[in-house]
Length: 489
Image (cartoon, rainbow, N blue to C red; front, side):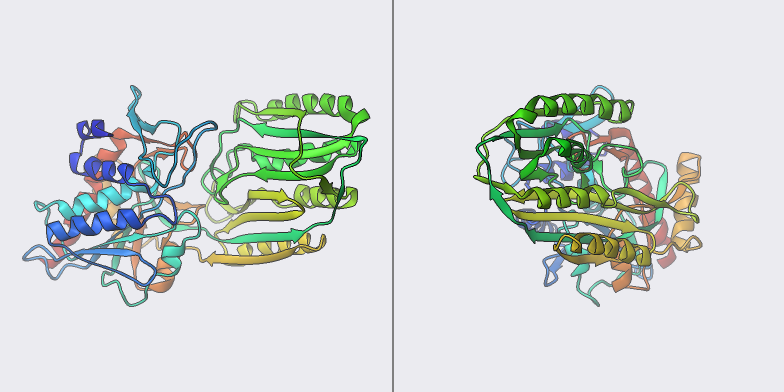
């Protein structure tokens, strides 16, 4: 399976990516892949070890004559975001990713995320370790776990373990760019047990669904005006309050770092309000589609008869308060950076929302280039939902990565980019949680940059990688490792 990847150049990189596609690796299920990589390292005589969390390190000594070169750490995360199209039976813990090469020069998967984020970076690190024609200093390849769900691998990385002083993070997704800073973030988790009341004989149940949105990365795509299914469905529920609706259940989004593509709610309302509700939903569908025209074209809104799983719904007052709180919650871009033009400074994603039998759960992801702004926006969330009696906790906080625009490592990369490609790379700061911020907190002496091939639609089934950019990425990575080795000659 995925043998067609062997037709692509550079073959070593694509061969390793095929291994990653064939080995299921959603967050929290990376053990099988770690075992495969350890076996591969054993066969090649490479030293390998793991820290207490399970992060994997492979090591290769310097090429003879380059022992004095600075140690280089090639860093990528092993896990991928498991998102599939509606109706797909794909099991991310068991089934391989099925890749396909398009006539347009892009690689995609069939009905699922591709895992180019960060599989291509991991494959590139493995290909560098395999390349015995390459002059290099001491090399370490660091493969972290659970980046997509909690940054767990980076947050729990052993201190005093890594030896290198230069780190190449291979988890960026834009051709012709190099990243030197990133946003920090924190998860805001809201839970509550809300009061319910029996469904009356004069009430009927309806199923409200909002589908067809594109989804995307909750950091890199947050400024693009894409729809957030939770934000929009709550808006619909708010507009339906004149029909005396009460919530039975709600399910929207699957990951806190992905823009939710779908959301569903079961509600009850007086039977004589049915026609008014249907008319309001039809009008709202047209309204929302007009607002998203040219940006997120696929929105579909439906209200259909349903049979509730439970015989109770939230009380009218509680339903009103919950919808009001969700409607008022920060969502999207909060502030643009005044120091880095065109870059989002602070944002929030209403990632996962659920309600069942009165149990309410929300997980949002707050991001900011300023750690103080991350803390403040998380506290605003806490203040808002405490008003309805919910318990709020802030967890998995991670720091941002402060840019070092004058670093020697960046200077070398820029020079090589000019020499090899004839242009200067764009030096960027990203509104996403690269592991560099956390790694820099644990290893403050590290110099770091982040670069990678062109990937679009990450965290959604539309994820795709531009094949030509992968060859360019490989060439730059190989050239940089070799250039750094000259310090030891």
